[in-house]
Amino acid sequence: MKLAVVVQRYGLDINGGAELHARYVAEQLARRADVDVLTTCARDYITWRNELPAGESDVNGVRVRRFPVRRERNPERFGRRSHHVFGSAHSVADELAWLDSEGPASAALIDGIRRNEASYDFFLFFSFRYYHAYHGIRAAASRSLLVPTAERDGAVGLSIFGPVFRGVRALMYNSFEERAMIQAVSGNDAVPHVVVGVGSEVPARTNPERFRQKYGITSPFVVYVGRIDENKGCKELFSHFEGYTRALRGDLSLVLMGTSILPIPDNPRIRHLGFVPDADKFDGIAAAEALIMPSYFESLSMVALEAWALGRPVLANGRCDVLQGQCLRSNGGLFYESYGEFLETLALIQSNRRLASAMGQNGREYFQRHYTWPVIVRKYMDMLDRLRAEDQGGAARPPIEPLPGWFARRRPACRAGDDVVRGLPEGPARPAGRRR
Image 1 (cartoon, rainbow, N blue to C red):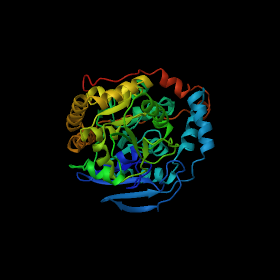
Image 2 (tube, one colour):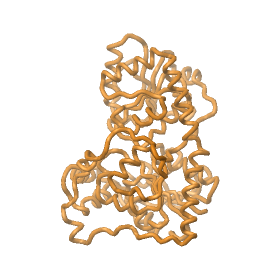
Image 3 (tube, rainbow, N blue to C red):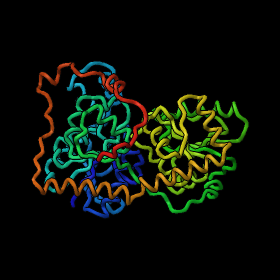
Image 4 (cartoon, rainbow, N blue to C red):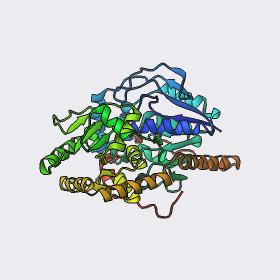
């Protein structure tokens, strides 16, 4: 079977959630199929500047084909268009202009998909909201699977994405909450799908003491791993944690691993280690009292799964449906929706060792049941085999819904994306029925 994984950025030094997710899946599927990665020459997700050479290369044994981005992102234009389509009535043309300004706008990548469509059995597109996925799926809908990596924000409420959610061959969802949200906004229940998530390259052994010695950490600590950004809930995390240190005696520290685009508080109990090697990341998680996930928006938290794989409890932002759902299904963590709840839940994790250990063990078992690579790869291969059997049986497929005509495309008949999302069901989803 010949597969193409299509993603906005790709590389060993690119650690965004969807991009890392795509690399892990590409590397795993390459053991079972002939896999190419189709991506851009961009390394940075803010500028989409062409920094990597166009053409073919090898990344961890997977063939990668890079295509240039037509232009860098203009943040002011993108911000203005985002404000308009998320906050006001607008047109389909406005949404397409927003998509183009978000980028990475690579007409060369889309042309490559269109020219070589017949060379691949299937295309796996990652991240519904980007230029490459929207236009690439329209170029090869009959061979396209989508890994949406959708979060509960205004983008999922834009009208241009409904035909994409209904027109792909299959969807590989990250969580039951993501599935419920996309089905509610698009009515795509009949499209083949599976809740699959992603595995992780978790080492069989970790060395927490080595981590402590390397970074000079002697006190107990909780850890945050990821981009340090207000959109990830980090500003609120800093406020809550500093309040915790004032309210309760003790020496618990907060250790941060990841690149920061937010000022770090000048507080002796908050340590920022910057970007760390994977070995240090896993040793650090294993050494921590718990992992904190303060994000408001997630389609799946890979780092929460990694913490559970290592037997550590998770403290999550309960205003994120996905994180709350993961904690409930795993019995591996607690969640908070206010400062008071943050204070009480963190104090409980630190003081009640038996509870923390039990949650960590529950999380480990949850990871083993649902997120080890054999489980993940089997779900992908089952879906691909099912679709290939349909093709061999000559099953007819309607074409993807066309865009409206020139005049209709410019009529301001689309609701604000944020308004659409506010009307969608909220809360953790239950995996009842186990629909596939």
